[in-house]
Length: 180
Image (cartoon, rainbow, N blue to C red; front, side, top):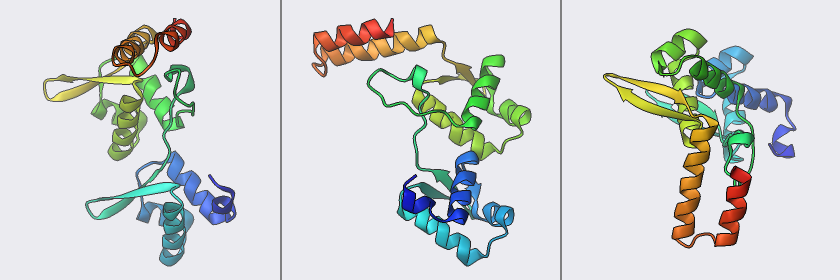
């Protein structure tokens, strides 16, 4: 977060709350901090205009999310920059590892997080390649991707890049060595 964005303590608190509770609604933020509607709207607009957060309309609620990509560094592809997972994402991964094939409904019961928070974070974990989903009748089951599966997936991507002349053979071999 840029220094001018964090200069205001209220704005900093709002941003931290959104980071720890992605998908939080305007009304919840207002109740948590006891802010006037106009004050909260000002700070949210400021954060959004500085691209620190993004918002989406969900029915009658406007929901706020951090505008950052969290990538768990040990599992990132060699050419990706490293960030870290949010606490919520780490919590979801632990639950998925403990119960392979867990459904979103079961995650809601175990973590007591809201459905929208789980959906947002699962989508991020799927994008990062840390979790995979498989349909099972009416449900979707989630599985943690083991390091071996992840290495195989990354190797396939690297081979595709090599075959498409997106990387040269020397780069491919160097990345392959790092991967193994």
